[in-house]
Image (cartoon, rainbow, N blue to C red; front, side, top):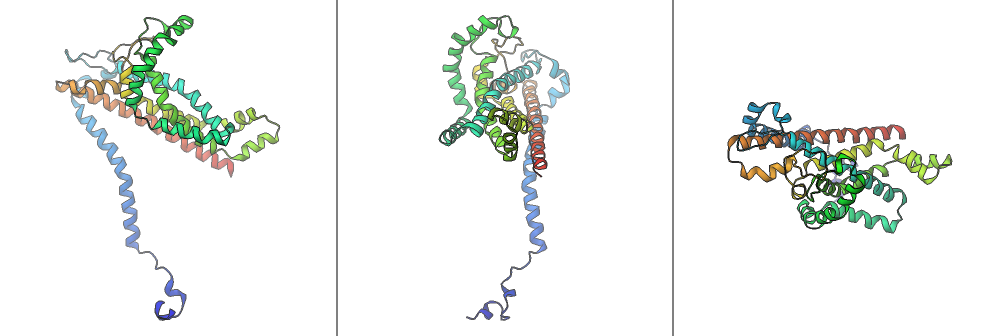
Length: 326
């Protein structure tokens, strides 16, 4: 068969050119991808609608008092989320306070200081740590970490920092501080991985300019790298906080699950996720079940808000970095 026959008998290369895409194909492709993207939003809206519908009785009866009420008494039908909101934010803040410096230090070391033979194994171990199920952390914390903390570090903290209200009162192994430590271990690989990618995105021109001005290695990291990436690092911290707020099983096993508000971190506590996991199967009345659904609605709203803030901060970082490079 001749080339002219293959090309439609014209003998020119025009017959081998691809046909222009049709309008119908373009429209169908755009519509299909749009539907895929909208499915995520639809799932989120459906989840929120389901929680709102399931908590209708509680929303109608308690209103805004549900957030300010600290009593949680299923027998008398009195429900308030303040204790659980307090426990959620305190345990998450303690976990973030512990994990953030460790994560940033690890990310800086792996990005700026670590030799090649250390960097890759360390990165693999961090990724492996992120893949461990939370229930495994909870079992380890309940059987190993909590007894060790109760007999060792906690008495030392009370001995030397007992003048602070955070370390006063009787020492309970399963307490807010134990929950914060477990949360810190679980969010550490997330913050470390995101922070490492952000530090890697800092242009080498920043470092070279600092070295050219006579800066030391530490000054280059502090001024040229950390200062440039501070917004993105804040976003990484917020992403870790979002994970901490919704953590359930590991926290449930070590926090003590007692609906009390105390300034001491040695006291037991309760979180939004923990009370839902513990009491959902025990809800025997419609109002009890609706109150648990409303706790889920509150937790969903808080988690969405935290993640939206993180995404906005990361987007601001990328725009700022591209502007400086240009």
